[in-house]
Image (cartoon, rainbow, N blue to C red; front, side, top):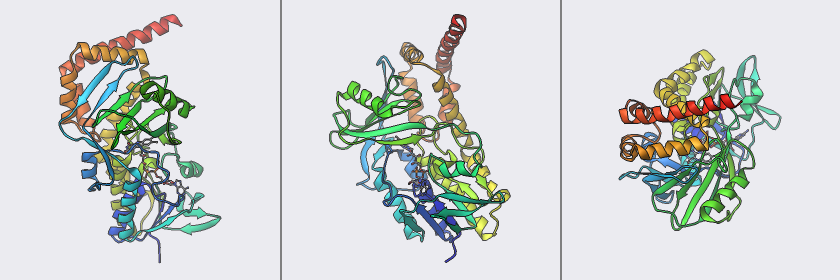
Length: 400
Ligand SMILES: Cc1cc2nc3c(=O)[nH]c(=O)nc-3n(C[C@H](O)[C@H](O)[C@H](O)COP(=O)(O)OP(=O)(O)OC[C@H]3O[C@@H](n4cnc5c(N)ncnc54)[C@H](O)[C@@H]3O)c2cc1C
């Protein structure tokens, strides 16, 4: 049987792409290096309610480990902001069961899923990807989909990858501990989460998933430090380490014979590192383009670039706004975060934040960011924060 689209990796972006493409008549073959779908799992599994709706998926009962309706955000000196919604905003899910559900849907749609097969390289000839190489044999296909995740190892080998920022390291562990039901926790502190934050997500019973991401090494020591500080405990099992992308999408995600989806394309929220929903939504766009390209026997970069147009017209504003917030967050230190929390309390912004969060969306953050930036109370607060940031930078300059 001919293969229309050959996909590397069987994470959510691959499986969503493949199911959609196969249901519209394409012969899709996936190569996944691991022998079981979803394993190893390093994800926190926090997926918004709207995210499920947008992806047209329904979480199963077994998959949902907890419902989340708010969170406590902690500054380095333990100042705390509470954001509590009346609605359930997200599910803490079992990512293994989630990925397996997607795999079943893909296989039912006719996708050929080959497990335990590592792809060594993308076959690049005369600036065109012609398929993949596995154990020194070549497998050809008019269209290849790189869904290899955040490492971008195959992509780097081709030389097609232009400027990109290395991902952060992220880690998760499950522990037994009592935390407030339905309330997640976010902790800023450069002692254990430099360049990002730590999190606690309640699960069923008295257990929770605790993790963090960091821009500098020794991630397990950092997790242990956080666990000791927050729960006076250590992980019961070996924590899983993964990579977290925070620099937004690549500008170019289509090439001759090749489309990039999911983390490989950078379709991840720069604010939180969550990529399941945005990756899945953009992968659905990739499937539409792939179907047309195969129908018209045209997988040139000129033809496939309609994929770039498509996800950019739908989501570029979202990624841009979140990237702007990320770049501000990257520039502030612990003292400045503490100061921001103090000003936040002084200006009595709790209700304002709640309004914004209630009206907002966990995945499509552009509108809420825009709304915040045009609110007079928020602007006054920002002026005070930015004034302080500028002052700090000027003082550093004077001290050099
Ligand atoms: C600590 C941590 C917590 C996170 N928490 C969340 C969260 O709560 N919510 C959220 O939305 N996102 C979260 N993410 C991000 C999320 O995991 C990713 O965005 C998502 O998994 C990306 O999906 P993907 O299909 O692009 O890639 P992946 O899920 O990474 O899948 C890629 C697949 O490709 C396979 N593969 C790679 N190379 C090859 C090869 N050469 N040959 C064959 N197979 C290959 C891999 O084995 C893997 O199965 C988290 C990430 C980390 C690290």
